[in-house]
Image (cartoon, rainbow, N blue to C red; front, side, top):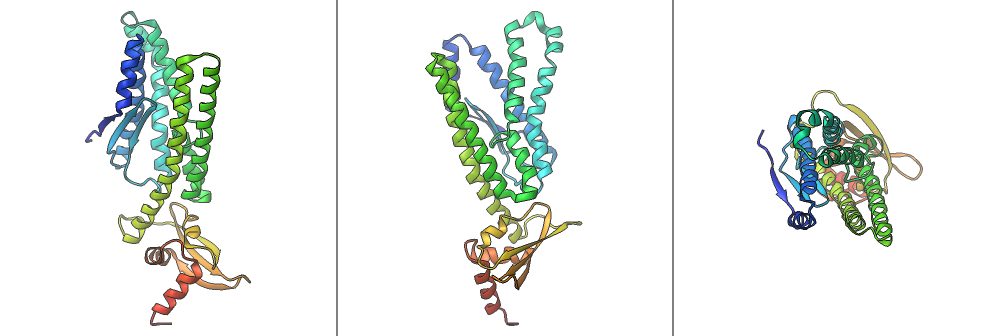
Length: 300
């Protein structure tokens, strides 16, 4: 495995300098090390599935394993990668007694206690159901099989923004009650979390567009073996984007376009659907692209 390079946010260096000035550098380095192990767990599982991890990013607010390849095609892969981080922290927390037995005389008891608390906190916080947290990715993968990838991403990103506002409000309350550093940390973390959740919503849409391009370009063996089929019935005035967003991972789709009276106007298979999307864009109504396709076809 070619290990991904580690990107360190300059603000993280500033934060460590501040912690050193406060005499809490050891605690800061412990937290950073456990976050790094959390992200390495994500990277190892991604590598197991043949996905490339370009880098691991570390910031004062956490970390992220950057995986350029799409997991939109296989929700089970995203679930496995997402759960690897929290599972790693739970294992590390469970190993605390053994660590104390082997090297307890060499370690500060306060750091041993912090080892357990930080690992449990990282695991439980990351399992909350909102993007960009691991729990949000698990729920999105499960929800995508019912409502489609794009809609699931939007819902979980909105949940993540709600969590960000909650953390920000908690920081404000702590500051109001003169809890200086904890309140300030909560406030900044909440703002960062809200911004990250909003970015996830936009990134999800871009990922789905890449998924469309991947299918229409014939990249990868996305249709091999046996796939389940699925029918969609849509009104002919609906934009193609609304149809594409309802496509589910690991399914092959047929689309029936109907008029206002429910009468079938066109039958499109998935290959035709994506070819039309590439040729005409996603904002055009289904009716318009079907008619344009018929005019361009010699058979009509």
